[in-house]
Length: 175
Image (tube, rainbow, N blue to C red; front, side):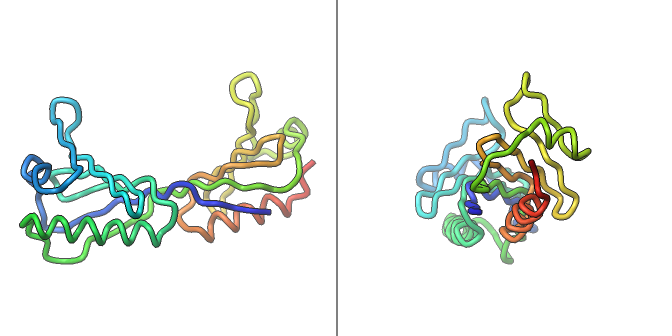
């Protein structure tokens, strides 16, 4: 069984800070701000790859990083850029993981119809979507299972949650 994280989504709060988005757009290379279309500044970090949606309230969302290490590095770089543009940031930002999306390869196929019949926490509507939605309570995630034996885990808060979800499903003796 193999897992791979594809997207880490976190919220970032710079407590006590308010951002002048127009000023920031001019001060940070690569930042875009078009208030007519979207009320936030968009900034993309190349190394590591991550995108930020920055709000005037001092809050931001970071998406697209492939690991928590990349998230931490991207936030550190953004914080440095914000400080260099004379934004009054007094403390390190608070970071909260909102969602981790990962792929899982179980190394074998599944009979989705049999799983749907045998597990009440499984939803399968092949006319609507080719995957089965398997909801777990611990960890609290949803795993989309496909007949090919591949899956997508969403809703995890850590890499360990992804591993635990994969282990739990692999241990269920699914048809």
